[in-house]
Image (tube, rainbow, N blue to C red; front, side, top):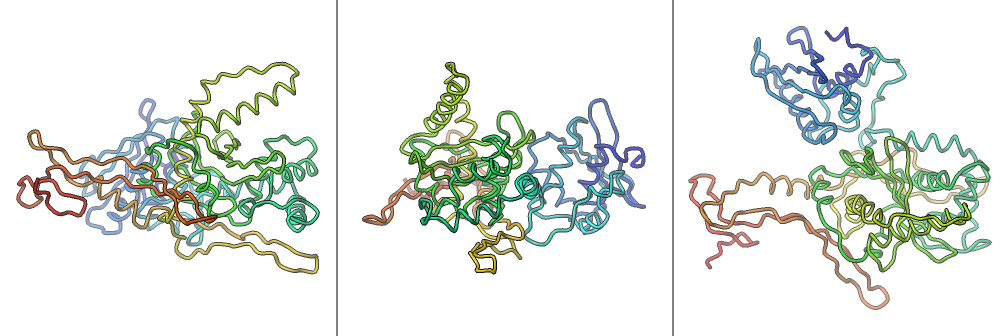
Length: 475
């Protein structure tokens, strides 16, 4: 059965599944079967083999994270001593499913056969040998998309990096100074873009600015799935927390966004950096979205205004420029402001958490953050970029575990007694410091279990509500 599907999307899914568990050997053979508009993938699991059982748990942990495309999973019971696990997916979604399996491991990691899969690549599955997944060192990104984009940009603008170093060494000397949180203002990035490629567009300049800035640190921020879900569900109200957003941990970061969409397109991740305009005096949060259809840039002016007002400012400026270019009024639908702000809100929540006070964030084991510094060379001052990516695990250490514990807590609501529930996570803004150092901080308060009357796990008897400290409330 496997031989008949080599070189097809079905084979790519089998390749993805094999990152976690072998889909067949001489004892228990798996299969892929087309059925109407769906494909059924059967994965045999030997319940008496600890490795097989552990591998299936690792695959199941990844399947539980995947929200797109939609999959169905069912245990078909024991057949010839093997537990038959059936995974069903629409034929048209096979490639997307394969990519989701391969892009990163689940919470429990890769399976025992991952090294073997890396060694042989896609060739045994009927694909060209070049389409292989190279073995990666601990802490390196499992999804090479950011690096691929960076390599493409470097080829398009071969002189860009040397030009960047010239501008940086002239900062505050022959050209105006700018804040430390900005790597290089967009005015200079656009100058570099048009010098290398006179026919380039503003979008090309925005892409070069983001990836050129990210090149020097190459931080990839991977967020715990439960934390990502809770953050994107939280509500942002009031003005944008400008002071908080100015505290990006690096000049530019790449945030992975598995399962998220923007404008109806799959969003793999986004680059985030800050821009300081010399004329006019303006600070912007620059976003470059890594979409299936290609990169898409958007700027959010930072100031004493809300997200929807920030979106409106950008769209108004775009409409004004279009009017000047066409020498005719450019009419736009202001209802789009609210729709776009609604789509950007969950993305902005991820950014604010990473910038917030004391986020749960650690470098992956074996990795180390690259802090670029100028070095004297025979060719003058040089600023060397990171030689590899650094993966930051966000929320995996404590917050994600707490969220999962709250989510799986057994609660009951006998009669009319108050039911235990999870209060949605929300943002808390507060002042810190004094005098000139006084600034706004932002802290995300995780969803918490509001205890109602719960059943004792041993006796089944109903217990009275508990306070935050866990003490029994007597009232």
